[in-house]
Image (cartoon, rainbow, N blue to C red):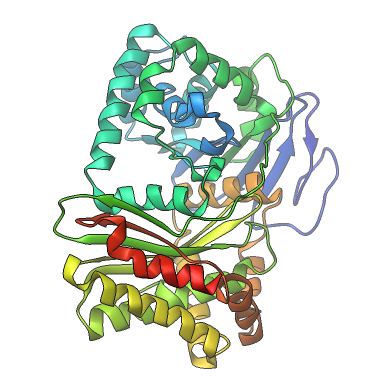
Amino acid sequence: MPTGATVTAEGAGRVGRVVGKALEGVRRTTLDSGLRVVTEALPGLRSVTIGAWVGTGARDEDDEHAGASHFLEHLLFKGSSQRTAREIAEAVESVGGEMNAFTLHEQTVFYVRVPDTELDLALDIISDVVWRPAFRSDEVESERRVILEEIGMRDDTPDDLVHDLFAGTVFPGHPLGREVLGGAASITKMPREAIAEYHAAHYRPSNVVLAAAGNLAHDDLLNRLTPHLPATGGDRPGRLHPELSESRALTVARRDSEQAHMVLGVRSIAQLDPDRYALAVLNQTLGGGMSSRLFQEIREQRGLAYSVFSYRGAYDETGVLAIYAGTSPETAHETLDLIEGELQRLVDDEGIPERDLVAAKGHLVGALTMSLETSSSRMRRIGGAELIEGEIPSIDDVVGRIEAVTAGDVARVVQRVIAGAPRSLTVVGPFGEGDFADFAGRRAAAG
């Protein structure tokens, strides 16, 4: 175990303090640098997945550097001080491994999955790309062009674009409304030096969770990790929480498309709110699957949409509950009326009946347990929990929290999130804002 390591959680072993009951092979250690290392031993597997969870995302940028987090996600795989981009890819793929990354509003994640015999390689690669990027000028310019193409592809994909525009509608003028990809103007102008400075300010050990799952042992991983750790630390960067202004009623982006792509939603609860499990049950009933109310009413009964679903997002201080539907321009208003009708039905009925409650909880529990059959899915669970919650609940704990949701809990969430909440609508399709003036008028009247 590295010198100065402090064990801070369950089943920890010989050094430091032990907190709570053991969690199915999950171990947690915080190093002197502030780096948090979490592992889950899965001896029945023959793979390991290593992930670096950086507590920085699109909301942590300023307007001038919008898209910097996503730019970094691309650049860190382009080459380090030790390897070129090709050498990184060949090292991983030559052993049958895979690597990838993703950027969200509050985190950026990099991961490598390899056979368990290649643990040292995975640690070397993930440490190399996260802490020792080269930022070679030619690679920065090459990836800048790639990202501009990605932005163009998003703009040409209305069922993707509508969700980005919806974020700006429900969180106008706020970092949570910023597009993760950034804009063409900010990406074009962002100098290499600014990207390197952003990396230095945010990619500090104190702002990173290193999560690993698979056929490994916690203490052995810590010992193997020691040579790969950065020489410097630094405080975890702070995060601004500017005041949320009122959401906008309507955003319409005109496109000559064959479909109308719509997202209707409301602000919701924060990611650590005690009602988050009740909201998950509500979302499942509303539009979480083929048996959901929206799918049955809009697709199965009326044939108005191929794709219709609800989803939830959650952040430090707030969240969102949203519904997407893609329908023909001629049936857009009818579909929108049905969506609003389902929301009002939840309010009028004061929640959901016991039958829907049982079905939704059964789906959530079953989906949770079946989603944890690979080292990569286990790594995602423990890494995300440590970064967001600062703890890793056992699977039994999570199942217990879901099963404990009552009809009264769901009714309370309906009142908190839906009843009387101002709706926000975003539409991408062959329309102008005047085509949805009736929606804006209903919201104004309700307010």
